[in-house]
Structures are given as structure tokens and as C-alpha cells.
Amino acid sequence: MVVEIAPRVYWVGVVDWDIRRFHGHELSTHRGTSYNAYLILDEKIALVDTVAAPFAGRLLESIRELVDPARIDYVIANHAELDHAGALPEVMREAPQASLIVSRRGAESIPGHHHRPWPIRAVRTGERLSLGQDELLFVEAPMLHWPDSMFTYLAGRRLLMPNDAFGQHYAAGRLFNDEVDGQELLQEARKYYANILTPFSAQVLKKIDELLALELPVSMIAPSHGVLWREDPLQIVRQYQAWARQEPQKRAVIVQDTMWGATTRLAEAIGDGLTAEGVPYKIFHAAVTDRNDVLAEVLGAGALVVGSPTINQGMLGTITVLLEDLAHLKFHVPIGGAFGSYGWGGESVKAIAERLAACGLRLPADPLRVQWQPRAEDLAAAASLGRAVGAAVREL
Ligand code: FEO
Image 1 (cartoon, rainbow, N blue to C red):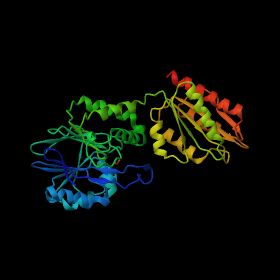
Image 2: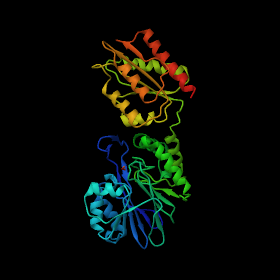
Image 3: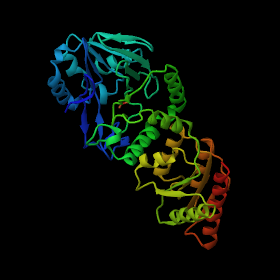
Image 4: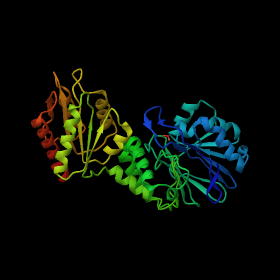
């Protein structure tokens, strides 16, 4: 499929409706994804990014609808991950005269992945490349989301191609943001940010400031995944600023796992306490809920309350993973809570509380540890914990 997105600029990517796990098995992609590549026909011909290797033939088919690939002068690889650079070997074979343009760090990662003697030219922020009528401007964007990441801007068309930044794993039958379900789009963009970009939020804010300072007019933002931002394109930039600031909202997330239902009952009583304080909440059973969806909810939450029974002197594996994510994705959740049931040892709750505190969460109530199934007084204690968390959230 080929779509002209601006005069003589064509989307030549591939929509992958089927993919359900990304980055190996790390990230769920319930709505599929797309690998967006762009072909610019000017006096010189440039291809911006490619697609994943299994789709290389489809990319070349689309290019051939427009031009003989052998006429491509420049291939711009904004980022080396193989969902974008996987088709480089086939593209470079079909375009033997093309120079490969990469960021300075891309000059490390692209050869590192492919081990080919391609003619690589590394560019830095502010470098321009004339295509004849129009010109490309390059902006290095380290840690959005890899050190090698780069944005490419087509000046005359006011078209920003920022690779992964501002993308979504969202296969849609339409190409532009004003043609798809806005709620779905925002949900997928948020999940993408939460799971991929949250640890780099400081760099996101800095890079956006730098980009805005360049005062580049932007008519469209065309990321390398999902739909293109054509209507009010800067809305996703503003949204990224909000997510990156991680300003806490007056809502709580309770994540728990359970073996015989006792910890779940405590979670529900904690929810009652939050409700009493007027704080909305959601409960997630970590063992049966997609981990990446939970993390999207944690982004911007005012409170995270975590529960696990004790097993083998520790917590259940799902909760261990959640707490690892909380630390390494660098979520800034201000308020926390810890709870869980136990039969004999009861070590899990203390361990959860310690991990939450180490991640910077303040626990306004003592961790709640309940032996066997909760009695009425235990449920009342859980509701009390919920009220304490709720009161702290209200003060945010
Ligand atoms: Fe960082 Fe879409 O790859």
C-alpha cells in the first residue's frame, strides 16, 4: 500500500495486524502495530526508515509502485532497532548507490546489528541535506528511546518524522489521527509512553524544549509506529510533556495477587476506604492482567497500593516483577501502601513496603499483614489503610 501524505512524500510502510508481543515477548500489542517508512521523491530520492525484516518484500513492492529502488540516493535510518532497520539489507542491496544516513550513535548500532560495509554518513543535530526542492534537517534525540534515536524533519513540507517518539502500537485501517477512534489512539499512545519512554522522561522534556526552541513549523508528525498526527499535530507533544512530568492524579491503583482469595478481599476493603475518601481506584489481579496494561495505569497515579500473600518467605512472582518495573521504569508515584495475607511466616508485606519506600513512595499507613482469611476487624483495618491512602491522595 502507498499513501501520499504530503506532495511527493509517500507512506510506504506495513501494517502488522497480527503481532501480539513486541520486543521479544516484553510488550503486549493487543491492537497490532505498523512499521512506518516514508519515501520522498525530489531531485534526490530519500527513504526514511524501513520495516521489520519479514516485511522487506512488501516495502520494496510499495517503493516500486513509485520508483525503481535503484534510484534511491539516501536511506535515513533514524534508529537501529530491527522493527525499523530490519529490512536494511534488502533495501541497500536494491539501492546500491544509496548513502546510509544515521545519527552519530547510529554509526555504532547499525553496523553492530548488520556487519555490512555500507557507506554510512553520521549526522548531528542541525545538519541539513538538500534533496533539490526541499531539504532534510536532522535532530539527534538520544534516549527517545535509544542513544542512537534521531528525528528527521522535511523542512518544506513541515513534516517531522521522529521514529519511535510519539508512536503507538496501533494497527488501524486508517493512517491519520483524525480518522481513528480517539480514545483507542490515546490509550495506545499512553501505554507506549508508560512502557517504553517513562524512564527517559527527563530527556523527553529536554528534547521537546530543544525542539520547540528551533521553532520549526510542524504540519504533521509521522512516527514510525501507528497513526500519523495530522490534526493538531502538537497535541501529542503536549501530551508527552504531561506524561513526562508525571504530575500525580487524584486516583489510586491497587495491584495484588492471591492464592486463596484473602489478599483480594483485603484489596477490595482498601478500595472501600478509598471510596470513603472520594478517591477513584482500580484493582488489578497481577496474575491475570496484562502487565503492560497495568503499567499504563500506574503512569500518573497518585497512589499505588500493592498486595501479595507470603510464599517461600517472599512475595508472589508477579508482584516481584511489578516492583522491578516500578523501580526501573522510574515511575514517580508519590503515595503507596502494602498489604497481604499469610499463613505462617508473613514476610511478603514488609518486603513490599521496603521496595515501595526505596522507589520513593510515602506510605501514610502501616503495612497491613493479615493471618489466614481476614476477619471483620481485618477488613476494617484494610479499609482504614485505604482511607489513609485516600486522604494522602486528596492532599496532593
Ligand atoms: Fe525502538 Fe520501534 O523500535
